[in-house]
Length: 200
Image 1 (spheres, rainbow, N blue to C red):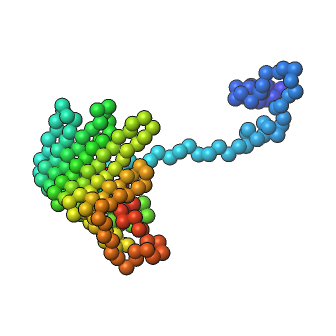
Image 2: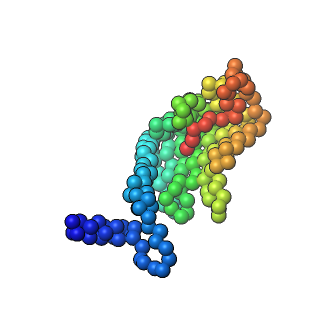
Image 3: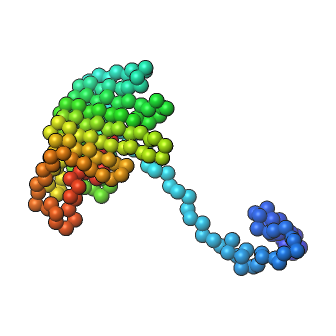
């Protein structure tokens, strides 16, 4: 019996539950120890699933000095949320390395995107430019669509001369916009005119 008590005390001491004795009143009450032992700690965070993106084209070049990749001819980008086709994509890495910070998709750009709720958006334009950079505590994360950009989704059709989507701030700016559709302004309508999913 004495051996069991010593083992239990050793285990509690090793776990840091027992405090050194001082002249202060003992705060290690039975209720406190039971609370420590029976606390339901939250489960560890689950890792985010890895999203695979496939890119195919007729040819590909990498320029080490400028840290750019250029995909030429019949370019196709596929991942679970995005299908993109165009004639050429140029992608550049940040000088610090790692993350792609600039993408230009050109000529007959077609984007079919699906958001996390399953809503679909069909985007067409002549040019789509993605820019990402962080300066201090400010993150710039934008997609700019030019050359007759058009977005078709469940709410209707949206066109403009230029559509700039500030993804970091959830802000959309359009020049000379035109929206048409049966559900515009109705209950649950997406009056932003820009798709919810990440285009890049």
